[in-house]
Amino acid sequence: MRNNIAQTAKIFFNPETLIPFFIGSIFLSVLGNAVTQILSNVVGTSTPAALKIIVGSVLILLFSVLGVARSLTFRRSPQIDLDKLPPVKHKGLMLLVSREEPCRKAIEYHLPQLERCWLICSSQTLDLAKKLKQDFPNLTIPEPVIINDIYDPLEFYQEVRKIYKYLPQEWMVEDVIADFTGMTAQGSVGMVIASLYEQSSLQYTS
Image (cartoon, rainbow, N blue to C red; front, side, top):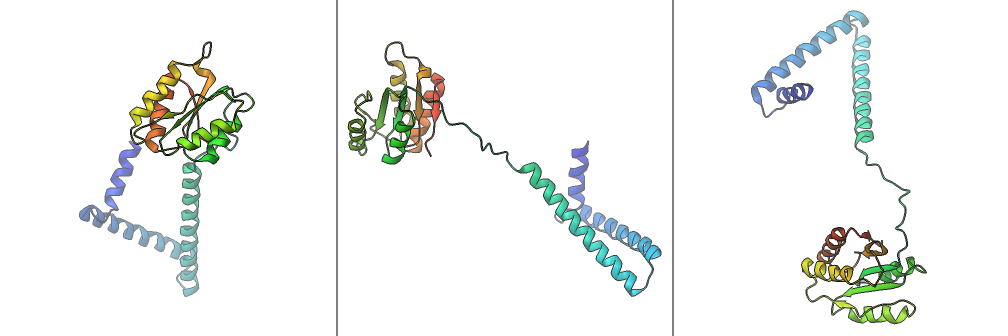
């Protein structure tokens, strides 16, 4: 009922709806004249009294606008969780290889818990994947998985599913976390969908 009243009020005070707007304008004019007459009877009809009415009206308008603005800001402001905890360290990490800095940051974060890291790359980032493999000799890093079409999310999806399917013996899906930071948006989508299908953990390295 309240929503219907609000919608009807919008129609009456919307210039695009001419006849209802005209009726609403007349109503506001009559209401304004009546309020002015009442204030004049209370305060008086002299020039100082009229100035008091004008100043008082402007102040009431300003405080009303500020009050409504503050109320809308309070209601619409998103609640940001500044105490969001980082992901739990895993012994398995799946990584999209793009830029060196976030790749190293993701790997180093899970040390010393990390035991195995799968690198998914393209032909352009294969050298970086090989370099990461050499720079972390204490980790078991299989041969990098090379994606042929980095704009095909299904190819990423299939390769990630293969990794989950052939985890080391006695490993569980919960032991692996997938970092979808690097490469293309399509790659991130493919990895995320595959990980969600497997109910595995996800992380993003800022």
